Amino acid sequence: MKLVFVHPPLDACPSGGNVFNRHVIDRAVESGFPLETMAISSDGAMPTFSRLPRDSIILWDSLLLESLSNCPLVQDGPIHGFLAHYVPFLNPLLDADRRKEEKDRFERAAERVQFFIATGLSIQRLLERLYPGKPVFLCEPGVDAAFLAARQASAEPTAGWTIQIATVANLLPAKGLTELLEILAKLQHYCWAWHLVGDDRTDPGYTERFRSRIAELGLQTRITRHGVLDTPKLAQLLGAMDIFAFASRFEAYGMALAEAAAVGLPIVTTAVGEASRIVQHGKTGFVAPIADPDAFRDGLEQLLSDHELRRRCRSRLLLNTPRTWDAAFADFGNAIRTVCATAIELERSRSP
Image (cartoon, rainbow, N blue to C red; front, side):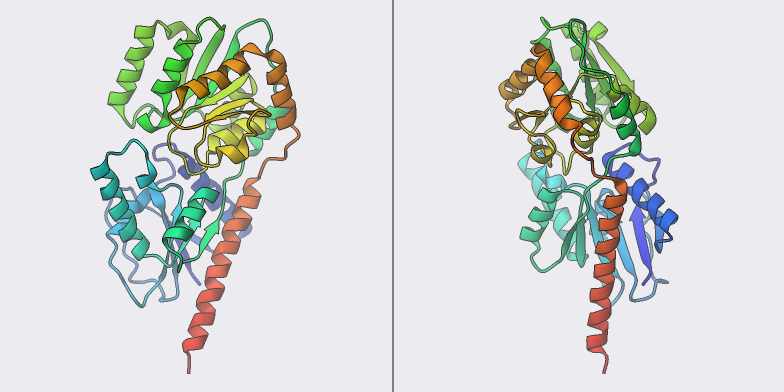
């Protein structure tokens, strides 16, 4: 069966979803897996599939939710699937009207697919509850080998000098960066420096407000914005850090958390995505309830104030074996093969 993966351009706005897509496509090419790609922009023309065989599989990336939701419903044609990097109506920052709009759009998209691939366990369980008649396969991300190399080269946590804090997140309201900034401002009596990695072009208004607030708090000399870094440079930066702080309000998995844990960084995070599986609360870091700045501040202060705690967290993290992208692609391939086998059996049952 022909498999066509419809996704945004791989050089589009940096995101965990694009990283996931790139790894899947690269491994498909390396292994000879029969995956064809079709890159379209989210505001581009609707792709046409009229020339595809009836038994083809079309896998839509969730970053193209709008295109999928407007795709014509076809009863007897290719099998459509949905790669769910995220579920937009779960964003807690949406007002009631926008949430309903996003939920309706997601429902229209779900009507048009026969299966889902979820990139996080909580998303898989949600989709299974919402659409009990459709299979939902789990394919969580892996960790690039560069982070494993950085973990071997990472230094012991610093003691007696500036404590280096890292955050990897695009400058967007849902990433909780302003909230994290306010927490750090209340911890100025500790000697810390904050390194922020992420794209600042998606929401220029938010970026400007964030920059202005840094200036108002007088923290310009303690904060370094690195912009977007490629994987080797990001891994190298994380290898030189002491703490990873992540105050996001909305994640499907938390790839940045998995990468920080792979390097061996003690983590303080909100309870988003699979944070509670990636971080052992009190052992490798702290997981605070979403929108509970006091709990987040308490966890961060414990890591800032206790060199031995940071060392113990790092030691425990380095005992873990991070999930690889090869394992992620194996799950992806198994999902597609199961869909193919089911479709073939169904077609045979219909034959006279």
